[in-house]
Length: 456
Length: 172
Image (cartoon, rainbow over all chains, first blue to last red; front, side, top):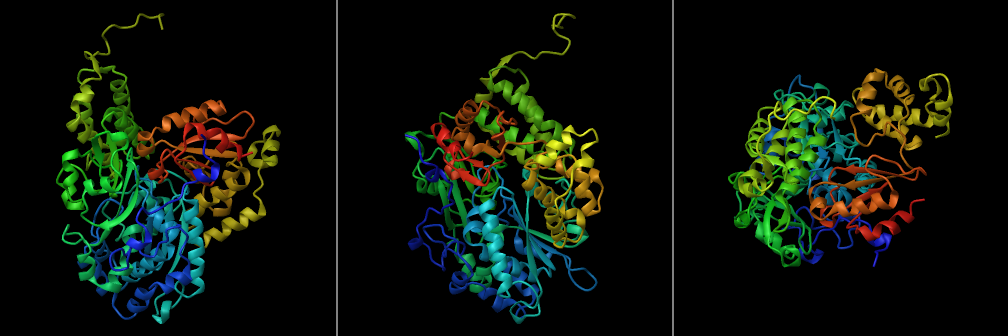
């Protein structure tokens, strides 16, 4: 049986039905409909939309806004987990400092991650409201939504929402009579994973090749066109309106004591599970709860390993399923929470092959700026390919371990290579036997068994 | 497409033959207003040209550079960096197959094999009739319904190898 074309169309959908979602407990998704339809300006306004903007702009100081976001401890949902309030407090502002930019990172490309798409396609006004508040807090002159080019549906939704917001006075001069001027442009990309890296994103926004930049200076000091620039993930910004509307204590309470981090998280599961999907849950929800929500592993198979938040996070084992998925907890086990969308690997799937796939991805997507990344990743791929074919050499595993260190933090301008190194390092640690099975040769030196001239 | 075909038979270099459409020029100039510096409109300018021609012909590079007031080398550097800017002709429809981890684990390789067999081409190639180009793409953010692919602006998933023939039919 082949499926019809319309039934094959991808539709981004939250797994929780609308009846299970409430404003008090699901700040990101309570407005969303079961039929996935776009929430336009009128509906958004009916459902508490832009209330935070009206209550905050001109009535609270930017520093007061930052203080609340800091206290709420909303940590960067793009994967790095850096405190958003802290980031905002480090943005240069004040006498003699030019107003800069607030950039929303909507370049969602982390393998296994499909969360921002939901917010962008179905509820663009929440992001716009979050950006207005972020722009106010950071004294930004202008905002950009850096959207990956493939998110066509999201581009449509955002363009329409930006027009609606502008027409209704939520963007432009003197927003809500506050005296604050701010507008947002949609900037769509043209491919390349590296654009999601904060400083590469700024290079790309400026119309250059997406090469990352050295830090310091941090974007908050000198970013786009040398102006103070704040880059925040979609989900991070979407948390801001509710924090300012309902308060820090309420936001902190959302995690229900599961985590020191505040709020909820868009968690998801993909891979061979029965019902892969996306949920808004208290931050600190465990991997086991997520896999249960996803209906368990397909075909009655067992779980071999899992990535907690995208291709640049480290492998975790079934024994780690009881851990609270928050930034600090996962960080203690040789991985990172990353984007919080689980990739499930089942017992019959090969970690060597998956790593080969991941490293091919990182190798292809390296911008080529730094030598360890540009040259090291293709080397890793070649070794993994030979091990996958059962043609690895003695010493290859040690070589991979060495390369994982040399690709690690501090060797390159950005976190691309360290991101590639993390699954490699943890894969070698947890599944060394799988690699060993692919080793069949003793090491061959270049001068050994030379091929006689004329025989090639 | 016609102006491009003409440029290839022309004895002069392609640069002479490419004429930036007025509408495209206006669209690029409009984009300039969104940024502090003109170079920033470069990617959008390339996309504007690509929307009309299907790809970015050689002659478009200096033409865009002139509108932006930047060097042609800067524009070419950008054009060759981004994977969704095509610097050679592509088919009428571009198929982007997600080959990232979640689709790998849900067997995109069988889907790719089916596409490759049906179309008679591999990644990076265009069918001889100019109908389809097949390319790999970074995680499409449709991991809950992998394996996923895009044809032009449409995203599909999960796509079984058996679905390929019917799916392609809609794209003439």
